[in-house]
Image (cartoon, rainbow, N blue to C red; front, side):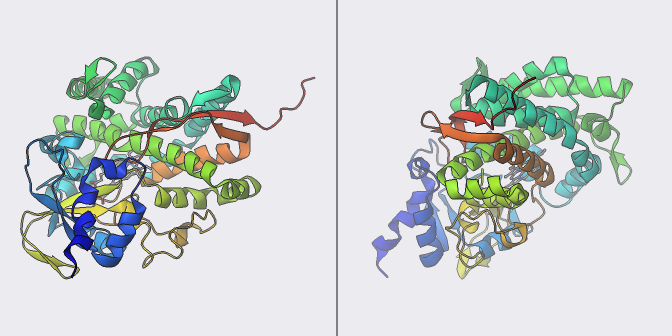
Length: 419
Ligand code: HEM
């Protein structure tokens, strides 16, 4: 076989520039067709080479196979991102449930699931609706806003604060720490480093847990504090870690999906018109948005033993990157994958935005869906005209697809005359 033909497959997905103009769908398509499991060399910008590279998997069936076999494909050995340093460190990843295997993962996820129930998610519906209404009212009042910071970020942050039960007076400083922690890539946000922000968040939750023990409330902090799994309560430091994990996993992902969705709808005005005529299609549109622009480009596992995947022999301790952006557009799994179609319906829209369906499947998927459906319902029913007023600024990352800024002008449907 012609060696050069595979050259872009062996380096492309490792390089930051490859993602500069959006997900590299042409490359994904060629890789799915010609080399669905291929060794990718370590990126050129990794300062110290802690691993020689990784296996890239681009087809839906292989992503599902890796996700559903946690014994062979470990989360603990190498973390969940192509390079752990890009999202903190391997040590931090291992304290989170997404970085644990086997019994450790089962215990942590089991305890959190007892507190983070579907009922609790559904009980947040009125407050999510209020927050969404508020951000649209404010946007109409101002005419021009930044969708990322003034709308999507507010919805995601406020919902997380409501879920956890953060008192009103503490929200501003928690948001400040969260922003600093989540923009650790930019090193410094609001004068605080990511690790300092993480320490402040942890200290805050230590204090809040003590306060909730004395004055229980109907929130996740109280519920997790009281939850026992197989008779054992979760150790205090793990509880604190869980809140930091929820913040890390649940805020930016939802914020980015809202931005990705609005930008996509503006790029597909016919689909936006369809939704305006038929808002009952919004849940279907949300699945299509998640499929079209998932906020996480990939998730990673590491082989715990020698194995075989799609005809390739993998050695023990090798990194395996599942490209969710690619598997969500695999023509073997979905019809017309390169058509953005809000009418598919959730059942006909298989995607991997929340993972490939294994034990680490996103714990917050139902909450994220509720936020997204509420937001996009308001977007298609309340906004008469939406226009970008500048070029949206994308996050520079191999791991995340989203925006730091999306300048936008929103006009509401004509208001009735007063009187
Ligand atoms: C659109 C929004 C979101 C997307 C696209 C998303 C996506 C993901 C993905 C891809 C994973 C890894 C799955 C795997 O490796 O199999 C994950 C895990 C996780 N997500 Fe989400 N997520 C979102 C929102 C949320 C929210 C709102 C929360 C919490 C409130 C949350 C909590 C978690 C947790 C705790 C895990 C780890 C689960 C485990 O390891 O067992 N996510 N998410």
